[in-house]
Amino acid sequence: MSFKCGIVGLPNVGKSTLFNALTNSSKAQAANFPFCTIDPNVGVVPVPDQRLKKLAEISKSKKIINTTISFVDIAGLVKGASKGEGLGNKFLSHIREVDAIIHMVRCFDSSDIQNVNETVDPVRDLEIIETEMMLSDLESIQKRLEKNNKKNVEEEQLKILNAALDCINKDQDISILNSQFEKKQLSQSGLLSLKSKIFVCNVDEKSIQNGNNYTEAFINKFGNENTLIVSADIENQINELDISEKKNYMEMIGLKETGLNLLIQRGYKILELDTYFTSGPEETRAWTIPKNCTAPKAASEIHTDFEKGFIRAETISYEDFVANSGWVNSKTNGKMRLEGKDYIVKDGDVLNFRFNT
Picture 1 (cartoon, rainbow, N blue to C red):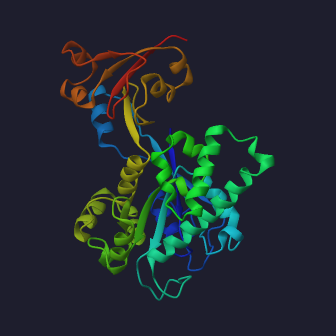
Picture 2 (cartoon, rainbow, N blue to C red):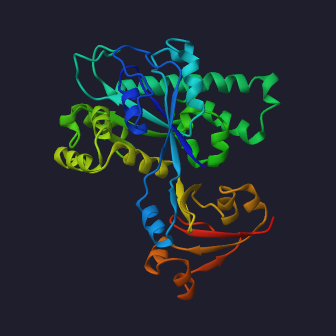
Picture 3 (tube, rainbow, N blue to C red):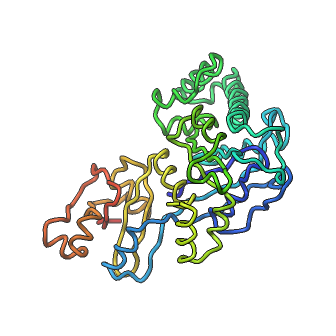
């Protein structure tokens, strides 16, 4: 599975610049005027994982295949979008299609880059976006709970919609539903306010290491657990360098990891994802699965027939695979296990599936 992150925010906060940096492309038009992005840009990028290279060396693989993540650059939102302002409902419909939302807020001063508001205030900007999403959810909920439509909604979804409506009416944080309903059921509701969120504070170069007054105010309000401080301009510059230049430049400005790596790490965490590997002479490959995934479900990521005809999974942890230099020694030294249908795949497992079609 590949997960999809939508980059959202007010116009001119740096969404397209960040998208181009993350996807190492110039697909997204980055210009100094609102709504320069109308249709969403989509970029699919490999997920960096140092473990792949080591596994491939041991297995003498001909090729390495990373798992992937998709980034979607979505048009800027303005106050009143839920009522059709700006690109309105078109913008909001694009958000419904992503697994997680990257909320990007402006945390820098610049007389050269237009600001749709008179002042820089990332807290206000995020509240505008979340209010518009909530209003859009409210309209969607009310429509689906109308008498004529209600009969077409499953019972569990009716419970979620009523609970969400109650939260909105009481001005409560709708995210409390995450502890009351199953994640799969919540995702099927299509409610924007329930999507997993990462907050990106877009700063200038001098604020990369320690942030600034804007990032401080934002973190004081929304916390730092899912907040990243990134400079979209710097990320773009890093992407234009070769490997050695990139390393030297990052050391010079005190940047330990790229924004891409930080976003992927945080994305895997909030979406509760793991990675397992297959490794042999032909290829070493990474596969993304949800946490607590059973072996047959993990096998279905390769092919649905693997799940249907699943017999068992030959399983070695990444650490044991490396320590024993591959499949043969791991098996000889008792580090390979045969796991059945109830086995919960762990992050870093190296698997070989036995199946019968």
